[in-house]
Image (cartoon, rainbow, N blue to C red):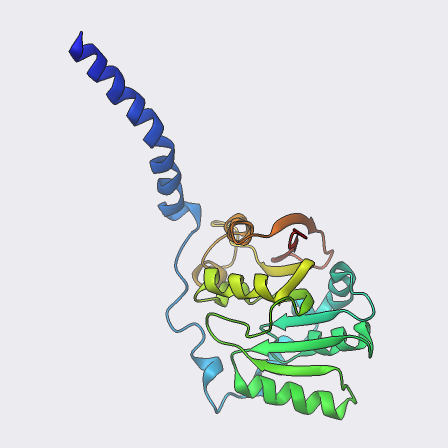
Length: 243
């Protein structure tokens, strides 16, 4: 009888533990599409001699999905006059400029990036275009460096896969958003057997993993928006709970 009870207890313990092991095993399997952030992924952007013109030629061209679809993306962001917006990973700043014009003089845009050269370009271009409701912010690998509850919208375009410390970065984004604030994420699909080899080596995880990470950080998933011009990209919307 004692042997039977012991065996039954052992079986119950195995059943309780098995789902956790199984879930971890799925994440660790190569065909689940989960890898690590490529080492040194952001090193070039931090260099003082970064060639900004070269990146303008890559970022601000109609052949790039997020550039050609900028008006659709802008609509999906649902920006209201007076909104305060953080463009995280602003790059050359073309979305920052669109946001500044859309939110109007009553709103503000914070162009956040880890690349000083990009920020210098954004500030110079904003001055040339007469945009006064824009501030550049030098972020870090773990923080967007904005005050608590200071923005209505955080926009992350083709940049989340560059986050070397996603949990810490998401925590800083969560703090910076006002209750009820929105997070818009655009990134590349990572689908083994379908995505380009470059994306498979460059993007550390598929859409479902990124979505789960953001929800785990406290956000509520709202929906995925279909953008007609997107073939490799996707757009997800999240909100920060009001209470």
